[in-house]
Image (cartoon, rainbow, N blue to C red; front, side, top):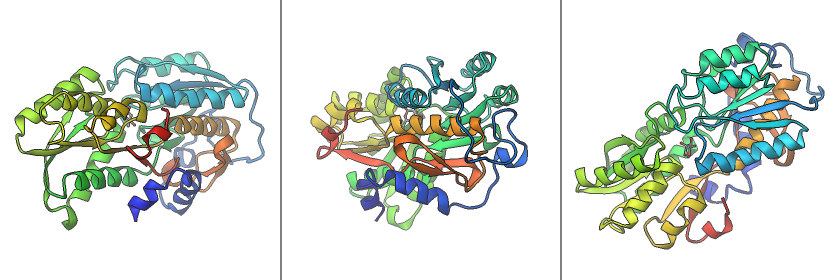
Length: 357
Ligand code: RAM
């Protein structure tokens, strides 16, 4: 059921996002309880408010030079142009917990109207984000959230439950429902990966997966070489390993590179989250059967529209508010200020050539 929904999810992405958000309930948002400085998130929303010309929209990904964020942020730039705003991108070269604080401060000092951040840690940037909010910026997290208290809206690429479920389904299928598996994650503090890991462990505890045992979780820190080395070490220290799940595009590509040149190719299954362009050669050479992702460009595009709508006062981040997101259509703010892009897509030899990112 989920499988079907995910496989055909691309065309239904916007619709599903709206439905998922609209059916969510409970929770509070930053806009509800304390307001968000001059970011437009305090008080009542005015759906008819004009989006001002020349908004300064700053993107701060987990790290620069990660093809996932490079491609994603092209969507931020596209949206900023459509909105008549000014696009900016800053960020660290390493996805470490505290690395983003100084960039938030810089964007704030430069008078950013909107800050869109993929957080390396749920709390490390909160002080800086609160200051930026008080200085007038609307705060949007995308890809990886902060504590909900530290932002106005979180643009989630898909529900965490769907992202966990698709990966569990893929690995279970690829190892025939039985054997030892391990996780090769990103950084130890990443909000998104930690949420997915927790949900995958929960899912794997179900009777249906009783033949599968998680024997290790290691961290490649979204660093190519470290991820490559961690994959090698996993395979050496667990001779009976049946499969590896890497819920990070950096980790999955590096792990596939190691696996494709090793004796384990075809013996150990590898899946997780990857970009079609980085994974194409490993699907072609038979190292990887299937993996999943969403459209990162749409995620950042949606985040820019959410930020502009907050900045204009069209929305405050409260549950049930709706806003227009250009070519993606209308979205609804769900519980805890979360806006869901849509379900993930599964890529394999049959469809990978339909995607160029
Ligand atoms: C990496 C990053 C990012 C994650 C993707 C799947 O690029 O860790 O946060 O969403 O993988």
